[in-house]
Image (cartoon, rainbow, N blue to C red; front, top):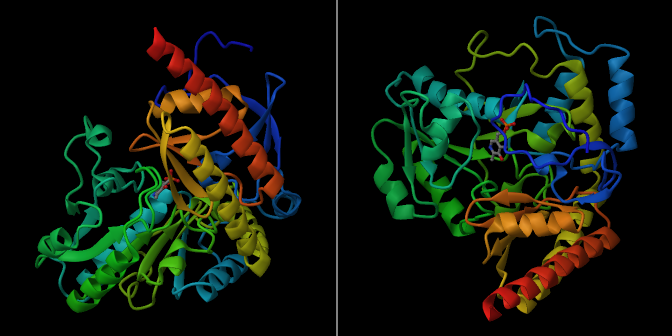
Length: 402
Ligand SMILES: *Cc1c(COP(=O)(O)O)cnc(C)c1O
């Protein structure tokens, strides 16, 4: 592999020594001449796989017309995408941003402004949950509450109270006169593919209704079909007041969105929020192309079928290798394999089989295939996992024997 002697990229990522030149569907072609099965989807982003013809042609056609327009002017295409998102969800209004963290910032601002606009600016605190991940801006880091990410960046943004995931009593206790809302991921991705019970979500909805709090869902990772519904909360059967989307919304083109009911967002008047790039024509064209495919009923049926197959096949691998794996977790095509051995060792062994996966908290390996993955490709992926497990298991047996 060609080696650049000195990197000028800020070394904040622990990058694997692999690079790719092109992709097609679920396959990636490395500059090493190898072909890899991509079960990362750019961390739940490339929902349509790589180089999907509908997405590519939508972006190409839009690029030749208008790439960027400011929000000084009307956005007819933005209106249409917003209307489609609202029609498919609980929401009445959409703010377009460029990333998950920015969509979350808007969600936090809406939550605070809701109370301020009702004449109670002292209600600004938001309850969040342990293991959460909401982004890397200063406010979203404070919301996520992970010490390792907050360390060294000065005083943390005030106003977040964290409680253990799924602990209803702790949540009730955390509600005080300054509480504005509750923020939660329907299924924690980075945190280790962890999902509280549906009853917990119903109880949160009730708590919010009883106390005039906003319920905010961070669906940056779970949204846009990842769990087999357009939005993960549709599977749970609990509606939020505010929701953040990003990752798969543009199928790989950066775009985020914050959706809200009209009531929740009523304080957000002209000038209260903004973005230079947010919802620009190229990003909107990408999101529109993604929606064209995802709003076809057969799209989610396919995700659910692929999910069932993947989970069944993985369960049998877990049964056969209890020395390496303990559990299959998750929904749709956001699947976690909880490892007994250090998860980076498993990820490396899978990479040796030319299968790309993503780490997560709690020693979990995330499998995030593009949502267009075929059943044959799921079977190919699992067979690579089996091969890696067979080799790892033999290696461990040898180590034990020594
Ligand atoms: C990825 C992610 C974010 C942050 O998105 P960025 O686009 O990286 O800013 C926020 N919340 C969740 C749940 C995520 O998975």
